[in-house]
Image (cartoon, rainbow, N blue to C red; front, top):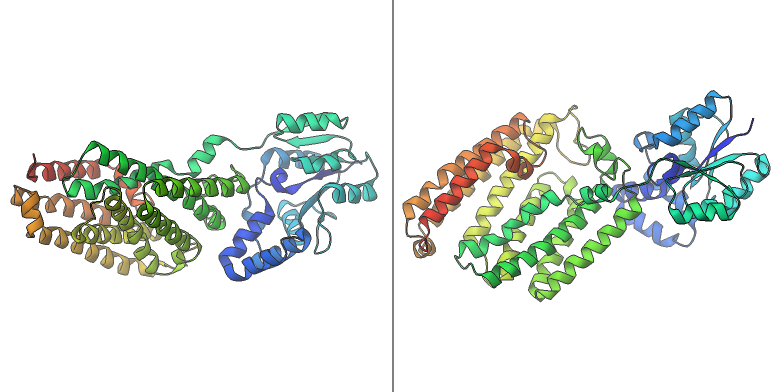
Length: 469
């Protein structure tokens, strides 16, 4: 019977195995992976072979296109041979075929032949004869295969690709797939941009609020938002496998295969360029702060997040950089009091984040992509309490400073603000310990009505104590 031949990357799978291999290898051994990629960039066949070797990619969790898989199952039920023919390395093709229960002699690239386009078409004609097989593909490179096939199945074709298929005398049979801009927007995590309100703190704390200053800080917040989203994408791409093992993160756009990895890479680069351009327009100091923020965030995504305790320090430092940037934006440097307070609070929340993950983890082993185990929960609890207490002490000590006496008419009203702060931190720590909050403490706080009430009380207390009210 006539075989059904199926392409893999972005056809049977909602992802690309070369990109998956490269990102997985990068997470395991960044230096060797980069050296190998640079050495073989001009030889796609050898590059694919090397990435497959370095990554030892686990194909069991790669997202599958259900429409294509259903077609394969139907063909198999009819007694037709189902053959995978891919530009991916042969070892990965065979692993995927075994996972899906598709026995047979499948075709893939090796260290000498990159099995795409004309090479794939000729290999299939040699095996089955021209017009004696049906083919499922998704891209322009498949035109040279469709031209030699009988029935032409195409995954989510663009208008241009559909027209090109008709130009070679074939009628495309469309299958579901592709991606949506809304899913890409979700990958940017726009809800996380709320964290950039920290840039307003230096201006508010110094009681130097004016329209021009607010406009400048808003521009800086946009730069930080683009910078953060750029690195969020990088982080998600490097965490593909660990996200797929997570009870909630498995639905993230890249992990679920809702957005192609290549689109993510291009978007990340574009956002990074936009962030640096806006920062540069605000001055070389802001450019420097944003560049440091992006570099540190990238280092965190690539390596530092896997280091026990170091990762929490880095998270707190990234929040503190936002405060410093706010001061740079309006030429009102953030005070040491403010930076120390913010660093301590976010050190505590970083511990809360890890406590939550451990509380909800289903195994006693290490968290995927992290260095923490269940046994670390007591240490994280102690550290979260100590750093939260340190933040409260810093705040109270500040109320006895000459700066506080200058800026606030109601010193005792200012000191009373420490109470709702302490209650809020206690709630955050207790819910993190119990594992009843979101994996991101900030997201949880924005949705938690008690946290919102405490926030309102704190803000009203600060305004009530201010000398300019």
